[in-house]
Length: 348
Image 1 (spheres, rainbow, N blue to C red):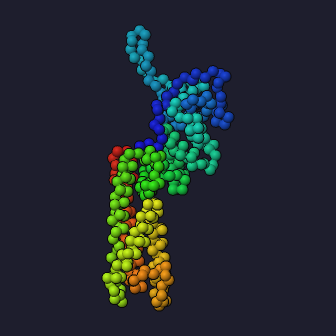
Image 2 (image 1 turned 45 degrees about the vertical axis):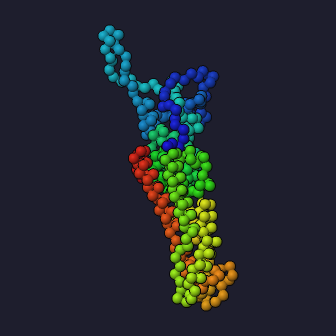
Image 3 (image 1 turned 120 degrees about the vertical axis):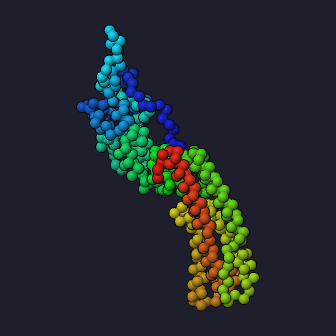
């Protein structure tokens, strides 16, 4: 699972074919006293910086490391020993990064030279995170993760964060992004979401929401147990009217609210569902405290005593539907985290 198409080939140094007329220097990031000349793929604009700035990257260290002398002695045929200093990164032989675009390279060089304009957009931080991961700039990656973390829930889709958590190895993003994605309603899922999260997460999502749909369907047919008040003299009628009200009102609310995706991952509750019942409960409780025998028509369940109605509404609020669905989501996240630790080395 990756956050972007895989780099097609390992970046390799090679001889530039630019003619003198083609060569351009970056207007800000070509330091004449620098000692490392770099080109991005399909670009003739050269960057010139100081080698010491890239020493914190294992990617650059490997590319600029001395090479073993491989020539044979012309008389004896023996292999010559020793190492040859790399001539990569000179004006005559610039270091060409064949898997890095110009925009990616420019952002990274602005960061390592302290010339990155602030504040940095979310899009640019995502680019920096991707490039830092590929180039093994650990300190840049840490800063990108730090800057992006508070923006994840407001500026990026859950599937995008899942993709980045896997693709760029950011374990701290995995659990919250998987929870947010698995809480999305099926009606809001797009083909891009499925491409972002990959096969394993998609299959987990399908199974989870199938189970949740079956649970809701069963729940809609059965109202919660009603604790009748001592003053109730018509228990059978009271129970029947409560069941009728449940089927006509609350079972519909359960399906409508949950299908629309009103479950909040942090509370595993539907704001519409809870608020609707809580408002009725507050009005009925207020009337009871005021010793008002007449409930407003919109708040009254015909055929029930006031106290039985209060008990019934409270029973609705105590239903396990949201806790049960929340537990199901957490169990799915736990399975995916265990798989990520085993398959991808992502220890959360």
